Length: 223
Image (cartoon, rainbow, N blue to C red; front, side, top):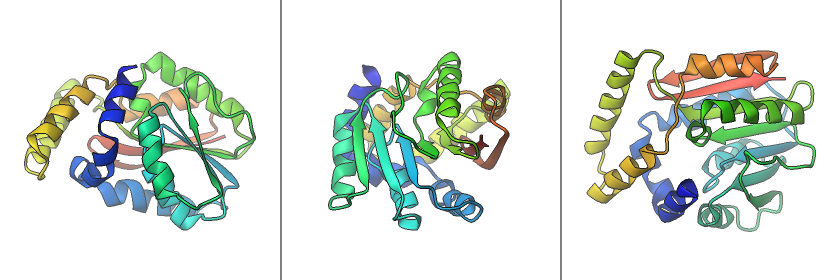
């Protein structure tokens, strides 16, 4: 379980370095979430896939404190950080498991995920999207905040080069950079266009990229 091992290794440093690794942090996490919430009713139950330290759920919780949250991750130490973040909050629960194998059996009306699904091969992405679609009610939402490659190899080199140069000047330590390089070996990025096409083929009624900044984009799919 390479993903589990590597993310457990950096669990406690993960949040403190997020703004360094994601130069568009506020737009990516906060403003995109605000945009989505301005157009929907408050969800009743939200499933966060690859929830890690609960960072994405935290931004949703700030706006939707009455919703129930189920945080799923394969790395137990990452979820331990989430437990501390939501200590005393009764409407947040946790499941340590591989979400590609199964989703929660209880009813939910929304699925969110941040910087996790890009670790899957395209065939596994499609299988997951199909499971999500089948599990959501009519009108249910799936929102993926993720890391993508460009649609063309030359432009992808530009994206990667610019991102890496930013990281070297961001205040990250040499060890942070080395661990990031190891995690990058686990990435199986697709382009935004490819993922939008996958979701449409999985029968989602409305699919749109609602935010994009080079490597980082937010895609919403409505059943």
